[in-house]
Every structure is written in C-alpha cells, then in structure tokens.
Length: 376
Image 1 (cartoon, one colour):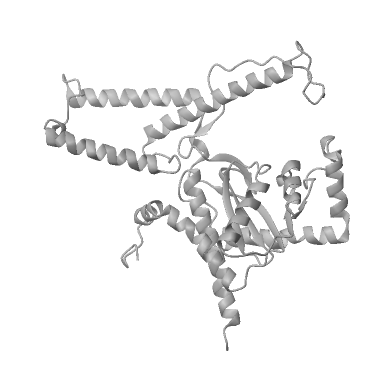
Image 2 (cartoon, one colour):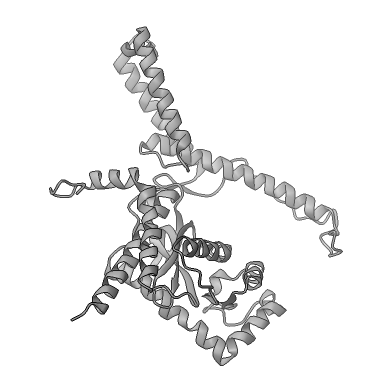
C-alpha cells in the first residue's frame, strides 16, 4: 500500500515507519487483545529474557572526546572555507531574500514556530540525520555523563567521610578515603551514528547494539517487549513485570501471574522481594552459568534461600521452562525470520521497532492458531 504496488523503496518505507512510529508500536497491544479473545494467553507461568540486537551503526563510529573535538573543528574549518569561497568579501550572514520583506519574515516566523511546536511535542530526543549535528549531540552527551560522574563522586566522597551510617553500620573513617583524580575531559566512547547504542557482547563477540527484552507465556505469546541501552539487565526485572501487567490489563486479561522465571542476569534482591510481596513467585537463578563458585556476596541468606527453592523438584521443573518458553522466540525472530538488526536509530525508535516485531510474532501465532482450529 505505501509503495503504490511498485518496487519497495527503503526510504519511503522508513519514512512511513518514522512518521507512524507510535501507531505501529501500539499494534502490539491490539494484537495481544486479539490473542486474548482467541483464548491463547495463559499467564500462570511467564518467562523473561533479553537478546542482543545489532544497531544501525558500526563499531568504527565510536569516538572519544578528543577525537570528537578534532572532527568538529575539522568540520567547522571546512564550512568556513566553503563559505569564504561562496560569499567572497561578503560576511555570509546577510539576510536571505525571503526575510527581506515583511511578508517573508512573517512566513518564516510561522514556520519556525511550527517546527518548535513539533519538537516540543516529541516525546524523546531523536538522532539527527546530519553528521555535524550528530557529532554535537554526541559531544553534549559525553559532557553530561562527565558532569554526572563528578556529582556522583562528590556524593560518594561525602558519604564515606561521614564514617558511620544512620543505621549504625561502619563506613570508611574520615581521612581513609581513596584518592581519585578528576578527569579534565569526559572519558569513555560514544557512537556518532547512534549515540544510544553500546558495545554489547553477543554470541560471536562484541557488536554495536542494544538488548531487546521480551516477556512470554508458556505458549510463547509475548506479553511485554522493551529495549535497553547496553547489556546490564539487573534493574529491569520489576519494570518488565510492570509492563507485562499493564499490557495484560489493556488486553482485558484478569488472570493473575503465578510464577516469573529469569536467568542470573536479572538478579536484584530488592526487586525480587517486591515482586514476591505482590503474590508472584519469582524464580531467578542466583548463579550464572560460568561461575564455578559463588562469590562472598552470593553466599548471603537470600541467595541460599533461592538455591534451596530451585533445588526442589518442583522449583527446578518450573525454572527449566525458561529455555523452552523464551529462547525459541529469539531463535525464531533472529534466525528464521532474519531480524537480528534494528533498522532505525535511537532508543525510542528501536523500542517502537521491537514492539512491532513482537506484534508480528504474536500475529503469526494467532494465524497458525486459526488454521489449527479451522474445520476440515
């Protein structure tokens, strides 16, 4: 439809996806509602996990602050040289012809106001298309991270200097704090093509990308989908459960979730306790597959309680469902459907794209379910 029955043009398709990003992401909830009406959504036991997805950016586009500064200066020098050649003796900042008259200025102001309103209506910062703008955005983000690091260090130094906490626990005595040299410029790397993307470890080494997450039922129906920057999923267990409950309520599903299973990457003691207080039984592996022996921290009582629960026949039988529920979804998406890379840039755009991918997964499930129950 959007290609008018002609050969698909990727620019036309991507422009359509960008303009209608929110509507396309909203299809996830609508398809989930259709699945619920077909009685395909059973949420007694649900599993959640994440998979690495390549970003629309190359690893070679990662730069540090000094390299960014050199490239910005080089870009500015090239612009100055081009303006000198174009304008000659003129300054180059004269009014353009459309602003010389009063009518032209009014039209220009109306257009500028319209653009400002559109920017303010945007829900999140977008990645600019022009490279100089992306360089400036990347530089600003590095500076913001650097300032946040400085504020965090000041707060941490004050915390340690107090010595004893309000609860009586002992901290570092004053004068024993470790010295830390404040960097003079922002540290770290940022990608100039997609500043939201990070280097994440995939099955075949590191790649520039995101972590796409999904929550699924025992019948492999996705009931929540999200994307995070980087690979740290430690703080995403409870947010994913909250997203799942919101999606289920929107689809008119009142059934209560009984068990949530997740691997060791989602371990977060406080979030696990809060989920348990809501009447949901969390089963999260306290030990990663590559840890031969648990560390000192992982020998604490709450870790031992979870190990005891998983050592029972019932607990292990519930936990082992995780691979059967969630892993085939990622395999079907990334290998069978060959969707292993985001086409758009920026975290909000990738989230909308992932929700559309999840919606099509559920839609295929719904289609196959209809074929299975169709009369012969």
